[in-house]
Image (cartoon, rainbow, N blue to C red):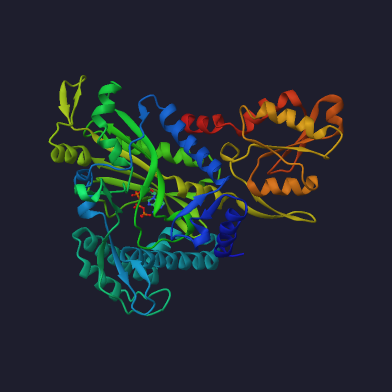
Length: 514
Ligand code: ATP
């Protein structure tokens, strides 16, 4: 099965089992907007809890806030979003498809990288053990040629985008002979800028309603509250403010399911530091955030850092944490060193003094900021795409979602072996105790095998079966999702077993201890 087929199956699976539905589906949906169903919302909430607790609870110098989506319109002038939150877009005249010009060029660059890797792989096969890869990369004529072309295209792209020179972006697309993936032609329009912010009106029209924006990122709610939190919480630098909330971007090209949506959710943390200490903290948060991802156990090889060559107008260093999705390595999280850009600009635009008096140095200054910013929905997609497996068993097959147990929507299913003899009542009694602490479900329909499969398909880590022996000795069987192994345990041990297997403690330990 190709990765593309796998991805299609995953999307269908998400709908079939109540994880994710297209928005307003009975009206044929709304492009790049999705709804989370009964299981999706549980997974999403668990991801948010994992992030919140790893950031706010485990770090005694981080606190959270929940700012409004609507903000004063001047905020977005100060942040640069009114002037610069633009994507360069280009249309193909034959297919009538619209693309982000920078993405077309980046895809071309990625293709050159693939070509190089193919050459290396071929040579490795040819030369076997005696293969000297670094030497080959440096000296092989074909690789050198591709590399030079690639680097020059990249440099031209960075220069054109930094200068906002749209004609140069178009010439580059023409020079690289990039064709539309749909029509296959090079019949392009000019490149135009497109602002990604959604506008709406506040107040009634007759009162002269003002235009405001739906926030395109949650970060600004943190910056405008810097003084409020610092003063009311008596926070000392270095400290951080965290927030989870909705953000809205009128994305030009919405694709890949919940990877790029027009309404999505972000988990952001802004960490305020002394000027000059930002690189130390940039490295600290890079490493902490990578440990947060890796603790989920999908494998080291599934992640990589991608350092930015073209820095945003506010940043002096930036990297992405990329995950190996079925459609390749793509960004799930950004870590940015934002300098004092935001606080200084808000000071300028609001006329307020936004500074910190450092009792240790006796100086006042505008703090520098390290930001960690991750999309909840991309994280949901990461978990689902890494978890989805079609497994061949001896005489059977199953679809299993190997969602890390602490994130699984349902922690345990309690199943009476048959629908009579007092077994349903006993199962209910077990649920009535466990439900105070865990999301547990009850299922009595169909054979036990079918019920196991249903729970595998939604990622339930444990199935607890109540049988006739349970009535005699108050024991039950626990069946583990991944190994399918079963063990007999006493009912009064269930709480401790579920807590150990599905709690977040193990993940937090890994983040903190490494
Ligand atoms: P991209 O290059 O993919 O457009 P970005 O660099 O603009 O992303 P940031 O502004 O750094 O993204 O936002 C931080 C995080 O928010 C991203 O890493 C991603 O997880 C998430 N995010 C951004 N845009 C979207 C979107 N349209 N849909 C879903 N998640 C998003």
